[in-house]
Amino acid sequence: MTARSDSLVSEPPAALSSTAVTKPTADLLEHEYDGIREYDNPLPRWWVWIFAGSFFFSIGYFFHYHVSHNGKSVAAAYDQDVAEARAIEAKRSLAAPVSEASLAALMADPAVTEEAQALFGARCAPCHGDQAQGVIGPNLTDNAWLHGDGSLTAIYQLVENGVPEKGMPAWGRQLTPVELRKLVAFVGSQRGKNVPGKAAQGNVVP
Image (cartoon, rainbow, N blue to C red):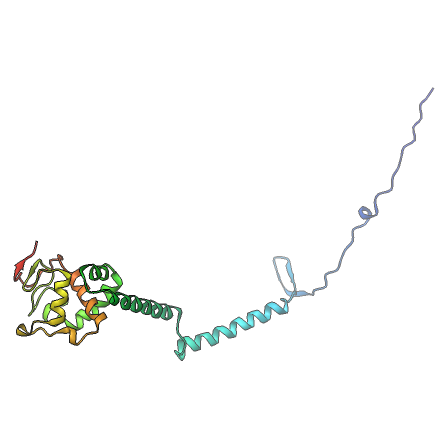
């Protein structure tokens, strides 16, 4: 007895029987490189308008800030804000009475002493030297003092009232209270640096 089996034959799916070819809507550009050609796909309109707007804005920005100098740069605005903040802080310090602690707080602020250095150069450097090393006036960087004990309050009284018999003016009459305190803070910050210059004068304060 011979067994018989029928073979089942199935038709291939329509998706496999033929490959759908879609024709690109964009045109091919004329140039060719290494057998590769590029389709002409223009950029979206919204992107082109943003690019154009950015370009013209940059031109206006350049002329406003760098040619006409009417605008204020970010760096300049920051410097102005910092200067205003320091001025406010300095005015607040005026509310406290002049004391060793209040002057020491100013002396500990590098920004204050940096600003006061320019004031010292304009007012005090002709007599005390650009590094406070002493010229006509005494060396302010050693530990010897002709007047007072070298404390911040003593320096304040000296700078404010001056030494008329020695030719030192009373800076309290020419400087604002803020400038006076800043100047005293700078002079105080020079103590103990011992910059080579004029020999020590007065009483040595340990």
